[in-house]
Image (cartoon, rainbow, N blue to C red; front, top):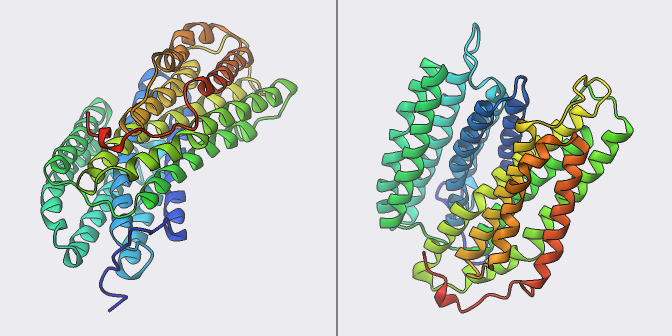
Length: 400
């Protein structure tokens, strides 16, 4: 029966190697969004469409974190079903760079939409199977499945129509999926069995996404012939990525985990869902846009590049706005967990946006250097505001 019935996870359950493998495939799909946004001509519409793809991917991955928190994802039929979802995510990743390109042969938008439907359908099947072992999950599943299934129709319809209609319908699908799921969880919250497992999964995906920044800094475009300025930009990218890692993993991550652990059992899943669904997911978005910006900067500094002008709005927007999203999301996570956010931290998080017009008018290397100096200052400044983010009274960690 061990291979047939789901194995319920305990309070001390931690992330398994199988889940890390699954998350690697998922982050591979996220990095393919970078390939989509980096295709010339890169414009604001392409960056917005990339954001839509990132959010669709992120909110399709989230329920697998809850599944792995309820039962062992690396055992029995749950593992087999998750492998099917992994294959669907891999197929989606392969066609992502052509997400808005319809043509002869394989229809990339339709393939992507159907792969997404498979990923979401597998979630529902796994949760239905788990509810046999955990009957209290059935009411949550009934409310959760309705918006998930409803979102499939505009998703497939948009893929068939293409163009502007695809953008509009896929945006509608995302809003139905996210909004409906949050309403469903508000009435029937998920169960959170292991805080360590839950926070580990989110942290591991973030650190893999930050690793993509290092890949972009170290590799750049595939055809790049490295020059001195490109090597300097790569080193600046490394320093900036270390700052982003430090701002989350050295201080905030353990404090947020401790704060969620201290919340009473009846509200813990609610607080964790808000904090990591609202506050943590945009951290990953910010890291991906930052990686795109690094790639654009180094591409402009290669020997093959003929563009010697300023960085421009698109590349600077990815670089500076990506960091701003990361810093602001970090503060949202702080507010929803440790409950302490200082006004000066908000100002520091908004500075990349204030500097965006300056960055777009600078040469690529100078724009990246300016952002790196800012991140170093923000990282050093954090020591003035907290001492390892000591959590306050857990009773105050309620939903805003």
